[in-house]
Amino acid sequence: MSGQPIDGVAVKAFPVACSEARLLVPALMFIALVVAAVASLGTPLITSVATSFHVSLGSAQWTLTVALLSGAVATPLLGRLGAGPHRRATILVTLAVVVAGSALTVLPLPFAWLLVGRAAQGVGLGLTALMMGVARDHLPEERSAAVIALISVVSIIGAGVGYPLAALLAELGGVRAAYGFGLVVTAAALLTAWRCMPEAPEGRSAHVDVAGAVVLAAALLLVLFLAGERNLWSRHLAVAAGLAVVAVVLLCVWAVIELRSTTPLVDVRATRHPAVAGANLAMFVGGIGMYLLLTLITRYAQTPHGAGYGFGLTTFVAGLVLIPFSVLGFVAGKLTPRARTRIADPLLLAGSAVVVGGGFALFAAARSDLAQLFAAMGVLGFGVGGFSAAMPGVILAVTPKSQTSSAMSFNYVVRSVGYSLGSAIGGLILAAGTGPGHLFPDDSAYTTAALVGIGAMAITTLTSLALARRRSSETNP
Image (cartoon, rainbow, N blue to C red):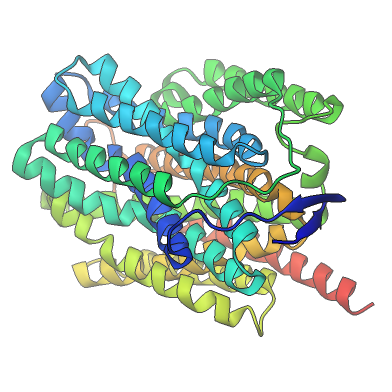
């Protein structure tokens, strides 16, 4: 095929490596879905892990936290490697690591090895941005935009797919059976990638900024640790605040390193572009709100009747509450590319944020019936699906094709941190609303948390509208 100039460098566009080019899109979707679903396996299995391995719930919580942490650290690294000539090898090696980690979660090994396996599984989260880079390089522009939007949505709804299935397998065959599901699907993803992933276009190079990677990893470790250790904030506030200051300092040091590096892990200068900076701010604040509502609804559904509210659902039945989230999220993801022909991406972000805010309002006003929880979860899913589908368009509109993976990987780091903080904020609000000697918070604490979520989505909406006004002024001077 003829060469195309990218960032001033003539590159040769490689044909898709699949025997059938039409299989590339399903392959991209499948891999993005698998890595998201497998990373989320820790959520429904925390209680089962604590029981099976005879550890505390706090220790079992790390089966989820460690996956989020490794994913947040791996995402910018894989994004940089994926921007170079060895993208196919990067994808295959990463999936091999995920498969190896999945095997560790299934083998009858001590709890420490389970955490190692979960960390290896979390590395797969960094592949989502690479799937977007493949789509942008090897599909026609109009087709690639729709596929990238769907990849973004699939990476979100993967949790809704994996949660009920993992919970059912845990109830039927124990925690090892649930993790066995992860081993099967990750092995299938590796085989799919080996058959279908094309080589990256020629003429690209990628060098990993090791110093920047180490400092960023340390900063993210502190951020996610502080987000996960809620008791630290309530019992040792001074220590938590001190660690938070250290995390901020490390992030500032990392930014300086990246600005001075000739081969930065993340192009910080590019992230200062108003469109990119605004999109990342919207993703951060919006991520806090989205995961906050997901946490509130799931926890409320499992609260026993003895608390004076709640439905006392089992883990599996509570997982079914996520089905409207996944279904309507996928529907929104399919509709968004069509809407983009008439509505600008920043306006779609704003509209989606309003929808999520509506989910908070519905949950705050009506949650006495299980159907109302299903409705709130459906509204949340539709809003998250639209938001996730529109986000790549905002960033990639000002990003060179060769930097697709790197640019989106940073956005996903921001999203991961936002999600973690959303979960932590929800826990802190509910903990503050729990009376002395009580196991469960007052019902009013859920209302307070919902109001905080509405505030977060209001900020997200205003940020998105500011992006829309800026784009309108640039296109119509």
